Image 1 (cartoon, rainbow, N blue to C red):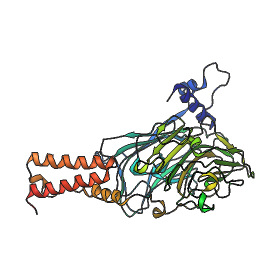
Image 2 (cartoon, rainbow, N blue to C red; image 1 turned 120 degrees about the vertical axis):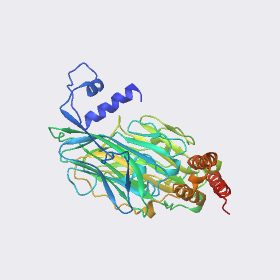
Image 3 (cartoon, helix red, strand yellow; image 1 turned 90 degrees about the vertical axis):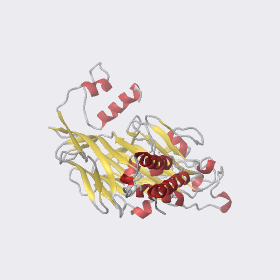
Image 4 (cartoon, rainbow, N blue to C red; image 1 turned 90 degrees about the horizontal axis):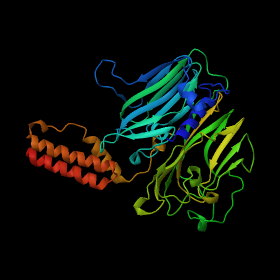
Length: 444
């Protein structure tokens, strides 16, 4: 991150009430936000082994919820880190992240764990660098990653963060650090509470003539936005700070002529904020087929399935930190799926915003089956083999060291191929491992 963008981010933190500085000081506010000694106490909630051992991760059993942090009183979550190893038995979309502020029973954050951290498609996770979310690579081939979020999350009467496993398999292991501050005084009245909400439209419907459907077109009009994909509908006083938009393009060709349209405080057509195309949200330039990430925007995934530009999984993000989008009463955030809504694709999103409570009730979160991503059978077969390889192989300890090393090497190669998304080759490598194991152990 550049020095300029770090200072801008510091200013954004100040703007939501995590600190106030003397405007008459000649020192740059970004410097003061780091150097000023404040009346605050630091704390951390983490998954450290309470028995004093080295089992410093948690596993969330099927159908259960684990509390990651429950901080009483006045404070602010400053950093939320979760380390994972994939594949886990449960997927990142099976696990739901929720956050509750000020003792409220309804969450202000409710989203699948992976999507919150810019990982809508778990098999395609890779490192990302941005001002508010980063993904760090762990061991090559193992699929371990460190997910970091740096949204300031102030509260006056307590903050609570949970993970729920909605699958029928164990989820984990999760290692986590949650850094927070507590204060002797409450946040100022204008300090909004952090919110994030996930949505999905598995197949967007195109009510257009057949000859215009699922094709790049320049004709056709959209003068009301009623059939747009809906990213967020919120009520209250606040501002948007971020978006993850994920598109599984199941059609040939460029899908991204859809304009984003943001309707402020109940306004009718035309909206106050009208875009010029999906790619403009991330500022990527026309028809991107490559990947990048910068401080405040990025096109973090472009699968180009089968070597075809734009086909398959795509995802972009945008942090509205220097330029938050304000609303006083309500906001309706939408985007066309193709020009004039002529494409039929799988859309999902996470909206990130701050607002004064109370907030409009969230729509019901779709169940795990309705959140599942579309993947080929070869991936699911390879995934099951990888999961089965975690069970210790009987009789392995009776083999010679050179034989054990050979088997371990084959298994590592299979894991590495899986993480590279070379699923057919991964299966072949694991089949070679099985044949070698039978040969070495004298089995048929």
